Length: 511
Image 1: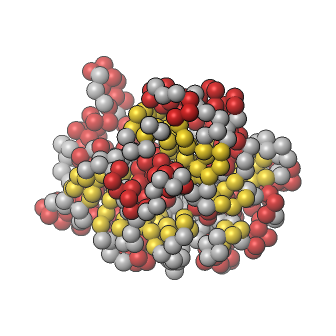
Image 2: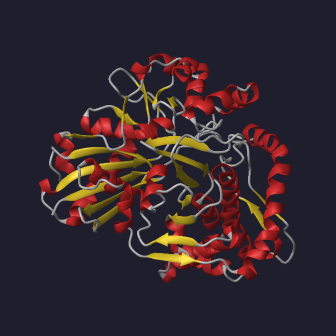
Image 3: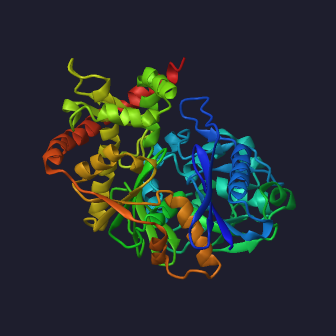
């Protein structure tokens, strides 16, 4: 039996899964790394710490599978979008990796939004006008760190850097390139005007290839450590967004894929470029006839982590002593409160927000607090607030692609019955959860099989996904959410007038 490693390089950790060619899982590993936030708008990671995490994760899954060196035939990659690393002429990092959450280019995004050039760029590249985009990060470096900008021989994302370090090959597939804002989405080539705006040349960017592009060979030192043959295939794979969508089986136009990890997103595939007149959604080519339209949000599971750590420290410690999962405990606490949290609304904008606000200055808030409310109300309101935010992105997507035919969901949240039922009630739609919730790694494995000629139809990924669980909306509950949702949306608009002021205060008085 031959094996394939699907690896997903995320924002806070890297996951590796090893599959046989029938799709059975033989091992999993998850390796974390720190996010560096030395100033309020910074969000960086060390590319070599991430690289080391991929080595460790693959080493662990190969050991778990207990297989001989030549049995791993391919490694296929999924990775976080919008990262940016400057490399010198020897391809050594001059910077850490700026993640999608880095907001230091906010003023350049604001300028482009105000003067209309951002909308022009969006229409050609599909990148929303927001500092998450490497296009805007490059403007920041050019203007505010010119010594690095002038010294940089290459600009890459985290996936390209990792693959180069393993193999000495510098390539970038189209879905990852699209997320930079430097790719023309109609031609799938580097956009001449975007390069001119940033001051880059094509020679400073990797060679563009397709998502199923493959090549052989890993440096012997890493092959030995991981326990695989040095002639293993590397398959380029795609962005985490594209693969999460494919990995839940949302292949057809009108089928929505929702994923909640550290961040979260709502996405669907279309057969040609489709632009939102209000620029709330991205549009990125993935492969021939497949363009991904969607809206990412900053504040997914990371907000629940904040509530877990900041509001429930005592309960978390008790859970450790009782040897039970502290997040399961929070779900049980939230379940003691009725749907709608007795009128307590939470806006989850703890790290600025992308879709649908596209405002790096956005900040979180509780609204409607009264003496009746407890921490149980607060944790349920946090969970509901994340879902309200996802639903607001879905409303924008419906304007562009029409009513959804189906809603498929994955991510760690899908293991929570309460949270998944909450989604069904807020969306007023059946929510389908595949048994295989590691959608990104699964899709990476499947792309490897396509690259190797072992599969030829993207739809056939569904045979690896296992049985489905369907959550149906509860009419008695969704009436409550239908009443609260307009209040949530109006508050978002009203509070937006004050976001810049409070964000500037926090930057000035950051002690």
